[in-house]
Amino acid sequence: MKTQEHKEAADSFVPYIPASKSLPELTLLSIILGVILAVVFAAANAYLGLKIGLTVSASIPAAVISLGVLRGIFKRKSILENNIVQTMTTAGEAVAAGAIFTIPALYMWHEIPSMGTVSFIVLVGGFLGVAMMIPLRRLLIVNEHETLPYPEGTACAEVLISGETGGKSAKMVVFGFLAGGLVKALGDGFKLFKTEIETGIYKFKNSLIGMDTYPALLGVGYIIGPRISGQMLAGGILAWLVLIPMIGFFGAGETSVLPPGTIPIPRLDPWGIWEGYIRYIGAGAVAAGGIITLVKSLPMLYSSLAATLSGLRKKDYAKVTLERTNIDIPGFWVTVMIALLIVIIAFSPLTDVGIVGAIAITIFGFLFVTVASRIVGLVGSSSSPVSGMTIATLLIVTIIFKQTGFTGMNGMIAALTVGAIVCVALAVAGDISQDLKTGYLVGGTPWKQQVAMMIGVLVSGLVIGFILSVLNESYGLGSEALPAPKAVLMKLIVEGIMSGNLPWDLIYIGVASAVAFEFLGLNSLTIAVGIYLPIHVSTPIMVGGIVRWFIEWRSRKNEFLLKSRLETGVLLASGLIAGESLIGVIIAILIWMNVPIPGKVLIENNWLPLIIFMLVVIMLTWMSMGRKDRSVVTKREV
Image 1 (cartoon, rainbow, N blue to C red):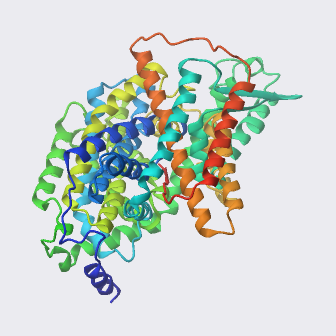
Image 2: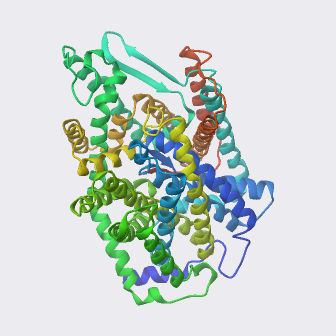
Image 3: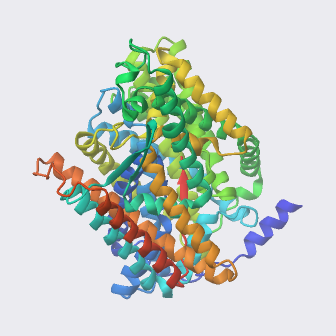
């Protein structure tokens, strides 16, 4: 009865642009702008994700920028063009997320893939994600319109519909972009001042408190809010003010080397203890946190899969309508595309996963794409357990490869490749689900959005290999500059199953810590990331969370004002993230091209970077408190 009511409600729904009306949509201008933004946000999210293990949703900033450019500059009045632009842009963000959480492990193994190999892995995963989600669109987006809210997709539709404010909102994104980029360029480009400050605590040996004075981290903290920021900092405090001093204290009389370290503990400073011991504890905690997140999601995973498969078996799903707003890419071509991609994966020397790997990608790809597409409709991309599903894929595939004799480095590379393809497919499927919900609400043409998503996947997939190669050669993937926490986790899982030569005592300490955090009612994965990363990263993120708390507290008596201020601040924070991250990629390209970059910082004191950082904090607070635009953005956890 309830299903029939939902179907009737879906049939009676009229989008903002009705099916009887056609507006310019997949135009050359929208494609060009979408391609540019897809590349920009792919590069920005790649850099950000490698640094802190989080990416931010690109749909709302892209929609706002599109409104500012197409409506503000080119005087275009079609909301559907703007929808195409944000659809293509999210492809870049999703492709970057899937790639950076898995593929950097290859670089850490010193099995550096070619740019073509990276792009191939990402492209087949991205295209599978789009193709496998297309048959689910009418079920999840149309028939379940009343039950699946798709929070990010709905918010993006609100921004597009209230497009008359787009020009002003776009200025906020651009302003943040320029501010974040300027600080990054002056600090890490021209080396005018330090971008990291730290200090010990009086009479507290081996303790260390520090902060990376990056506007992007401030923006991340603002977007994710004080609770998540606080739990992340808690992990940093546990590592740098508890575990590191403890290891130093108990190891003070040790004259021999304690594995996995390579230097006796008394000769290590806090950074040496973190590098030799804490990172393994953090990696174990992150692995356990990801698995716990997946286990907690199992009831939702099961119910989502059951509901989706049940919906696919219903006869009314097969009915075809010729209305513009209900036309997908034909099922025949989708099936051919999926089959062709699986065959290519099975026999391509670029992946070398064989038939077993291709079958695993087919099974896990369909299973988890189906689940991910529905879960983001229920709780949003932020709470979708992408990491957990990727971990599950890696665990099972690595065990299968080991049992079938496919071991050693070749087996580990093949297992990671399977995980990478599935991870990209999950990220892309979740994003296109949100995009198709936006299109459904504003009256977009589904097949045009699906084509736009594929174009976005193609363009960003072609550049992501170059981006990763440049970042690795310039900074080093897995280094202090770009620690790539999620990729280290995937590397740890595959190595642990294949070789078993890891420092398991430290890893189990991390696992037990994650379990303890869960019993305390905390988010174990968030705290685990804080343990794994230097406290220098968590501190500025916490400052951003405090700024958001302050704005919420000051605006608590006026709901509309509260929403307006928070949304305006989030647009500015998104600009800070995109601007700094993109300049970071540009600096890496200049280093890669052997362009002379200053090697010595001009001003060495700690006060100047702190003052500059606080000026950005004041700017974010003041501009958020003074604006009343309506725009939204969300964070994504992988």
